[in-house]
Length: 227
Image 1 (cartoon, rainbow, N blue to C red):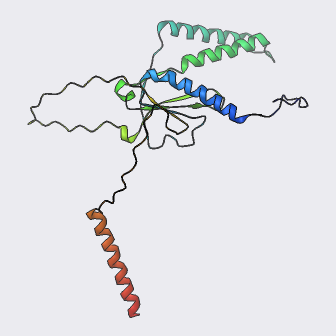
Image 2 (cartoon, rainbow, N blue to C red):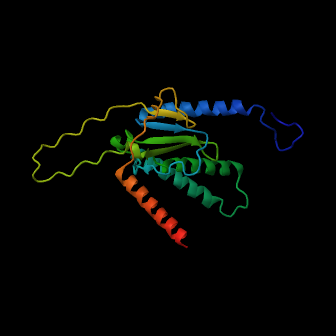
Image 3 (tube, rainbow, N blue to C red):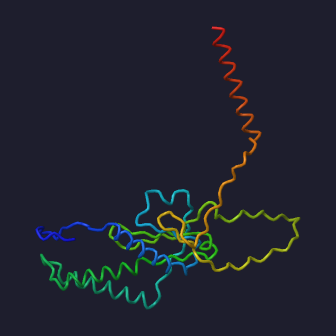
């Protein structure tokens, strides 16, 4: 809601819950569109906390090259930008039309420079992406993060005595990414099974360490009694 008595178009938000819901729905729509890329999971939130990707392996992709047509367009934009700058180099203030055109060229050149990253399909099938909003209010998509439990198993190194023929790698099936909204399970994601409540025996290593600590404690107690 706006404030008619403020000169800076100020105001306040009357229904924050409605705004949050609309933003969440917009982000979920964007996430649905990203499902076709083949990622295993998609995490969606208005803003992720600092270090949200800690512990995840970041994929190293390959930057796609400009096509001949794109390269020609980029070259023409850069030439126009340099020409306009040179024509108005001595001016204190740029004309509004020139300033607007320079801003348009900068935006177009930035789109060419921010090339999409291409990942291996096998990596995409086990990795995921984060969908959020950046500080300027624009959509932010962080691609290519692998959780430890999704890492590919380590294959044994074949020896010379192993005459088993190499098996061909199976085709990667197309999967639908599991979308997580704000850290909660979505309807398409199965809930995790309940943990087993049965009491499990202690490992031999843990029993040995506990025994050693108990022995040291008894020795300290005897030494204190003698004092």
